[in-house]
Image 1 (cartoon, rainbow, N blue to C red):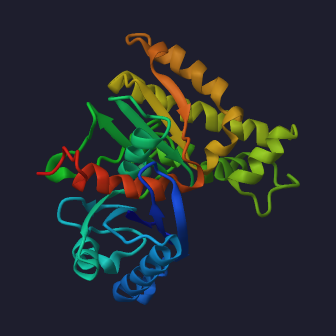
Image 2 (image 1 turned 180 degrees about the horizontal axis):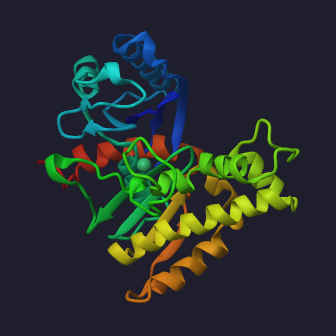
Length: 313
Ligand SMILES: [Zn+2]
């Protein structure tokens, strides 16, 4: 039975996942990166013992998905924004040593893509893209059944491709990258910049609240949703034009309100992708739910270490 470890900027989630992608038991704790890597490792090991005991299953392998950059084949953390002090630490090696089983790690976007490809909305497709739209935009690309990797096996940052050079400055270096214009916080910032100072919902706004307000017909929330849909559509249209995948799977917290965005997204794609058979690229919603990243982490083990592993180097 495979144990899954999902390391995010705010939380570490752990679970036992069965061979059909179902979570049998789970735990989570704040990542608390400031307390140091050794502390996070100790808590991760403890939670792994707990989920194993609760599911009454022995851990036979460990799959890990982590916010990046991470080095998938060495198991090391790179210079991760959320926990810069963990750089060079090796979670794969440490968990293999502790549990005496094989472990493998991928960027969490790639892990989620593998999860949806193996057990979710991408099942049966060879060329798929998974995009999670939440506080940021993460993307995993699977081409011909394999995770697409760049030089040194680096995970490409599709969420930061350029959409509008007159847009807001992002940590990535671009002005107007996709994430800066279409992740959840972009909707909040758009209202802060554009709505009048006496707009009644200005204080404490979140992407979720904006979606709720838009559903109830609030004018400024609807305009923010329109702006969001358009820019989501531009990024997705770029992906369709560049990759013509069989399916693009959309997940993440913003996509919980997908019906608000889909019409405009389809319009933008239809208007922008005329050189490729865009109508053949399906847009699907992630089907593994809240635990997409956790389930994807388990899938990482099957992809890299399982009986049908085809990506081992
Ligand atoms: Zn960016």
